[in-house]
Length: 124
Length: 124
DNA sequence: CAAACCTTGACATTTCTGTGGTAAGGTATG
DNA sequence: CATACCTTACCACAGAAATGTCAAGGTTTG
Image (cartoon, rainbow over all chains, first blue to last red):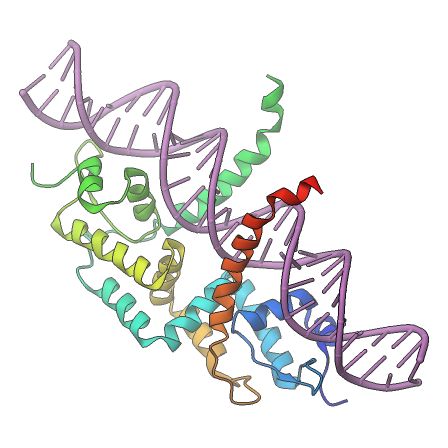
């Protein structure tokens, strides 16, 4: 056996078999198949899965986001349109530090925390 | 009055006031504020909102995705890492057209349709 | 100053994403 | 050829994204 099958690959990469299929489906990894249709993971794919894991964790990204990045590099029209939108008229009236992003990211967490603290309100 | 306030802007752009605040929070639009804190929408901002709407619709994107695009151009480290991941080892064993994306996009719809057809199963 | 409009914050709903199962049916291999 | 593993398809569910709405409290302006 030269390449690993899905469960073996799962064990050595930390992804669940389910997610390995998901990653493939998202277009982030292409695999060879055995004659009977089994997914075959070679060293290159295994490595790629490990680095993918790191990449996602390091920047707190999701598979969907990487899928979007993929689209950006496979659809010139998309890339152009997005580029265009960001370039035309910075739409930045004053000089704003542009890191409202912080607060934005926090909103999500606040919502979660709030939800976690709420349960006993039903008793009131 | 030189600039529009949020409800006026909402009417002329098609966005709801709620979404206008959301868009701003997502870092996709920066606004001037009146002395009292009212958001002020000038011609540039209005135009930007309209093109944003088109952009999202045309490529079936979400605000979050544009936010990611924004991150890509504001965080060199991110862009480099993503770029790197896509460049190293195409991880493409054969020559695959790479547009599994089609089936991928369809999966979502299938799931929805399936869910819509299921309701009466509970009676069985 | 009162009516109309804005602000932020919190809660609710809907849809999608990320994940985990399970079922029905092929593939591999001792 | 039987056991173990794989495949696709479908159901389920928690969490995130996209939106709406309401409340409490400032701002604008006739």
